[in-house]
Amino acid sequence: MEILNCLGYNVFSGRLDEIELTHTNKILNTISPISYGISTKDKDFKRALQSSDILVLDGTSFGLTSIFLHRKKMIMNYGADVFHFFLNKINKKSGRVFFLGASIDTLERMKKNASNDYPFVTIGYHSPPFKDEFSEEDNRIMLEKINAFSPDILYVGMTCPKQEKWSFRNKDKINASLTCNIGAVFDWYAGKKPIAPIWWQLRLGWLKRAIDRPEVLKRYPNIGIYFWHLSLAIIGFKKYRTGNY
Image 1 (cartoon, helix red, strand yellow):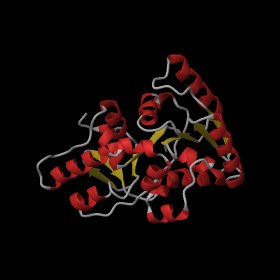
Image 2 (cartoon, helix red, strand yellow):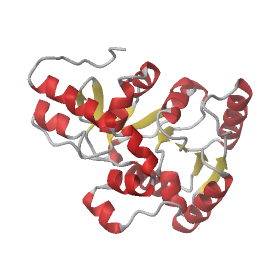
Image 3 (tube, one colour):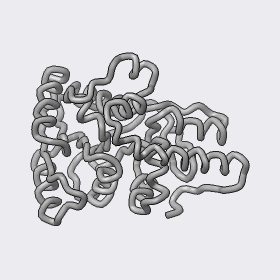
Image 4 (cartoon, one colour):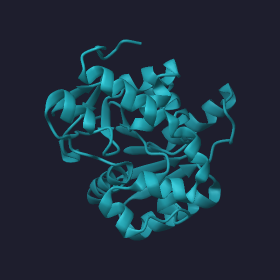
């Protein structure tokens, strides 16, 4: 698997079928200009991203990092790509998938859609409390439900950076082969936030999200942080290395 160091993050640049599922839980996260900007102000989130077993490119803009610094074009694996790829993989082996996050209504819609699209996948789900910080009891219940179900794949949709930090803290307690933090995909797949084909084809999911949910515009100054840091790296003013927490 090709891994490229992009501003201190080891980003996977390969096909999803190169990722092997084993009995040991791996964490797959995505990185974009927005998540990069957030990580510069949140040390726990930065550590969670840098500790990813697989960190995939989720946005054309962050791909500029490898073009300018490595003269290579990276392969993009959007959250929705990850979601459908592994569901299809598990469908072929009649496996098990668990959805963690979102409301009961969203999860029920996801299960219904997945049952139609991937009929040989057994689906489990749990809606955790909507709060900034989970209590020990909240965590106990989440882990008990996940592990009792024993999924091949755990999909987590609790928004960034909450989902990444939760998965990082609980990695060794999760009984799954792969934990994927895919955020907004839950609402999209449930049909609550549809993606028009043109947005998908042009890889402008970030613009579609901004139109559908104007509140996410508050995160967009983080894009400026990314481009500023990229500029510093290009001119050689600042060096980045992975694991520099």
